[in-house]
Length: 182
Image 1: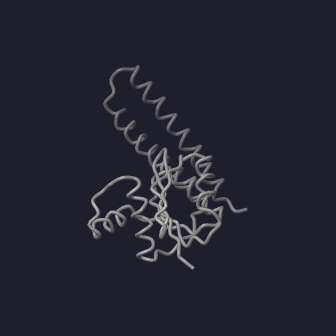
Image 2: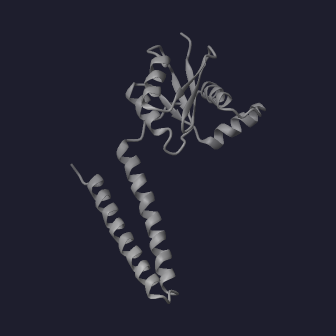
Image 3: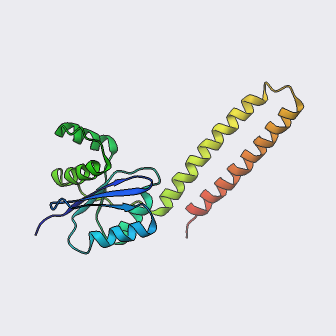
């Protein structure tokens, strides 16, 4: 039986896909219907691994849908993928070429699939990132308050600080709900 490895280059609007060893290529919209078409295109045949680079939020639906369909997934660090291309002397940088290179990398290095991170961890990461940004905003507003002379600007800054504190409280509550047992 032939080992099938699929490489997917993920972008905001599009998924470029390459299947090894046949070399078939296809592009799909990075939408719900596009993902349905992708899963249909991949089919039920024996797929050893699907290799892709994480791309912020653009890969999450792809990852979730492919995992739910039972496929073995490999997320590749973009720096490692770039070094793999450099090692092969590949200079072309297109989405199609990237998909082919990801498939080739997965097959050549026999990359092992990893379990998909649970949604709760993704949600916690988003909340923590938002919390960190709010803390930076709060620090900046407090520092700015020290130099404000005009009453209007002091009131606006105080209002901004109150809003930041309310947002921080809401995020802390959401985090507590997510991590609460049961």
